[in-house]
Every structure is written in C-alpha cells, then in structure tokens.
Length: 261
Image (tube, rainbow, N blue to C red; front, side, top):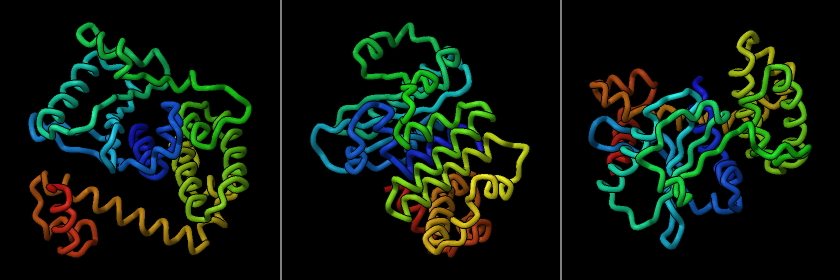
C-alpha cells in the first residue's frame, strides 16, 4: 500500500485527524465530506478533498500527501485545483494543504506561486515537526506512526493501541482506529506477516468481535464501490466490473451514476 493511500484512508475513516493537523477544532469534521474528485480534462484527479456539507464560510480543503521529491509538484497541483474551480465554480472559498514527511521532500518550485503561500491559502505540514509532546492526541500519534523507524513504530504502536482501547468508548470507532493502525504497521514492518502483527499487538481478539466484522465488511464494500469508476474508465463493461469485484450489476450502475452526479 502506498503512503498516500494510507493517509487518504485515515482521512476517510477518521476525518477529524485532518482538522487536528491544521489546528482546527476536530468537531469541524462533522460539517465536511471527504472524497476524491475527477477533473474532466487532461486526466487530472484530486485524491483528497474536504467538501463542506453545508453553505456558509467553510472553505474547500484540497489535500495532497507528497512523500517523494518532485520538482513539478506545485505546477501540477495548482493546475488541478484551478481547473476544478473553473469547472465546478463552487461558492465556497478554498485552501490547500500539502503533507510532507519532512522539509527535505519539499522540492517543488514555488517561484510562480509565492503569493499563495504568503497569504497562507496554501499550508505545508512537515510530519517530523509536529508537536513532540509526551502525550499527543490519538489522531496525531496515528499520523506520526507512518514516519517512525521500525523500532520506534513498534514501541509507539503499543502505547497508541492501549490509548485507543482506554479512551475510545465506541466499539465501532475503536475498531476502525485499530484497523488503521494495523494497516500502518503492515506497511512499516514488511518482514512480518499480518497474523504475526496481530499477535504481537494483541489485535487477534478484536477481529473476532461482531462490531469489527461488520465494520470490515462495510469498509470492504465501500472500497469496491469506489473502484468502479476507475475500472469503467479503463474500458471494462458494467458486467465485467461486476464480475471482477463480486458485485451485482445494479450496484455497479448505481456507483457509476453516483460518481457522475
């Protein structure tokens, strides 16, 4: 799993983590819907967008996770944003947030975009510079897990898992967070199998609960439905996509129609 996919999964499942990162009240997540948007020209796609559910003064947040140095990153990112604004003409204002592991990955040329940074319309977050308090929030601790060394990741994951079990009352929310932490650990510890990781961190019992099973099934279906438009764009028929994903033809049609609305 790519690093950016991990972050988009985090923001999809626990959107308040994003608002903690930009130092806004976590409750603002309730007024947003996180999704990806298609820009119908030049095959552009913006993978992380927080769209306000209601009107008012809430801005659109365009989010990009960039872990690899890329000299042309900003020219591409802003092209996608401005093309989206031209096509959709949203009433809301907008802001952009770029998440880097550290400053060394931020190599894009900003020569033509200095005003956007000076006005703070665009923010850069360097994960290695996030607050180093002894007791960070669960959201920030989960995000920082991605950039830790293997040894530190194992140590911090044990602390984080205990914290989730002690502080999160909802079994469903607890299950979602623990599943995300497990996904990060699988990414961080490639030499270990998933079952070894489950045993190491005491996650095996969690997977036997009904709440976890229901959450897993719901997440699995959601992932399949989100992949429908991409498969159709590759030229597959509705019937072929349904067979490949194990879905009903009607489910595929509904997913395609919802994406085009």
